[in-house]
Amino acid sequence: MASYDNPDVVERDVKDRGDKEEKKDEEKGGFLDKVKDFIQDIGEKIEETVGFGKPTADVTDIHIPHINLEKADIVVDVLIKNPNPVPIPLIDINYLIESDGRKLISGLIPDAGTIHAHGSETVKIPVCLVYDDIKNTYADIKPGSIIPYRVKVDLIVDVPVFGRLTLPLEKTGEIPIPYKPNVDIDKIHFDKFSFEETVATLHLKLENMNDFDLGLNDLDYEVWLCDVNIGGADLAKSANLEKNGITYIDVPITFRPKDCGSALWDMMRGRGTGYAMKGNIHVDTPFGAMKLPISKEGGTTRLKKNKEDGGDDDDDDEVY
Image (cartoon, rainbow, N blue to C red):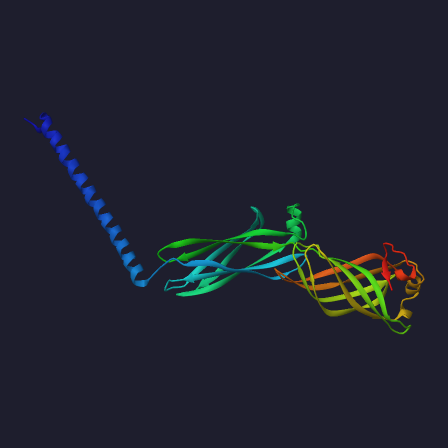
């Protein structure tokens, strides 16, 4: 009787072939697993022997090297430590500065350099905040205010064994939106008068419109009477301009009345005389040194008698 006439024999042959193929697959899978484990063991031993590890990073400082009414230059210092025996490339730096969840500025710095083997390096991230851009985007951010900010930085590095890694960093702080002070000539006192040279003292009224104090260090200014420049000065002057407050300071001025034309004589006859003042104040703030402009146009001065001489008060600036 032929084997194909016996169904038991046929089934046994098929089963034997199936068992052999399954065993062969198991042996093949076991071999691949062994190769994979072998490679992994070699990688771990190389890592242990050579000493590969993940780099670390931290935002160590945020400083403002320059700030004025138009913009603030900000530098973010990031300290990166590389524990590996080979240099690692810093592929990209992504940064974002936001305030109360609203983006102020963001950017990307590609190919940011290399961190030396077994070394550390401080990477500086320069950022420029343009105030007009901020105020045009967010109308509720007012000049003179202080706003909170959050800096977010993603460092992307390429490390042997580990591959490409992203190191996320954050730091918070505050930054001002500075506003120039208001200035008025409250009084002019003549210390010495002659046609060739007159020495006077300007009693200035400075109003600090900011939510932070200004430490005055220096003042430069020029004064005009009826569009005639009567002079100016640049002098060191110390004063604390309290936030949202008014401070009075005295500054000297020397000029020649004969160069003023009719402006000075109109003022001395009791007629209102227009004046203007322009200059800058150099101040210290909690956020760094600033140079802020001061200006007054359309002011009016007139000569007034002292009160004991029967003079009346009015809203014009006084000249004694």
